[in-house]
Length: 255
Figure 1 (cartoon, rainbow, N blue to C red):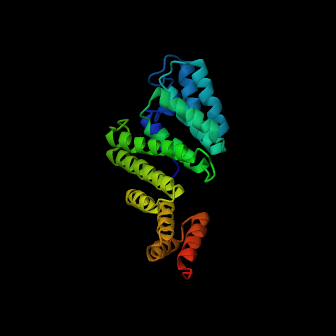
Figure 2 (cartoon, rainbow, N blue to C red):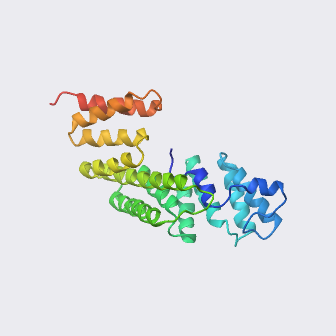
Figure 3 (tube, rainbow, N blue to C red):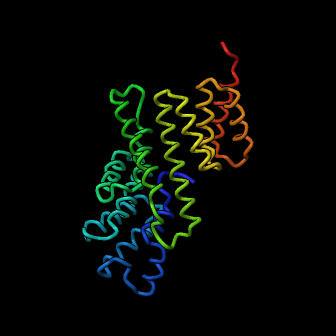
């Protein structure tokens, strides 16, 4: 389960499940004031998996119905659509617009932190400022999702608890990536451990933990974790290659 936005949970949290059925029954979508606004919300939900269509549907909804109850949802979807397209500048712009509507939106803080870490380079003059900002986003995610109540009764308790754990694990993964960028490998190990504990079936977290072990000189731990990842025949090829590389580095004779 990746990335920062969990689309199905987002839809549930926004109260958008069942909207297609309501449209078929010619009922207004809850919290909308006209058939046109209802149709615009439905178009946004139907646009998922097509980033360009999502961007258009979000802009149509926000521009035509500026006070719509679904403004936050539209901006979330639009930010994630730009992320999917690889337009990280616009993803960040729209993510920050979400926080103007709801400063405690934990899904967006997680996404923004990840974008910053992924776009920060070692030779950036403002590297530390960027990473500090990312840390703030990740810590805000942990704080806000930990304090949050179930956002919609359509979510089962099991679904909500799973979503909470996944978001918190991903925030700890982000903090681990931040620590790796700073070469604070002991901190990275601690953060990646929490990510693995929260999402034990996520191989990317395990590989990052193995890399942190290897960089910290804990080669036996790195090799053992890589072996565990590589024993899974269903892991993506990209992760398999990284795990193989980490194991090779950890297995190299000391100079």
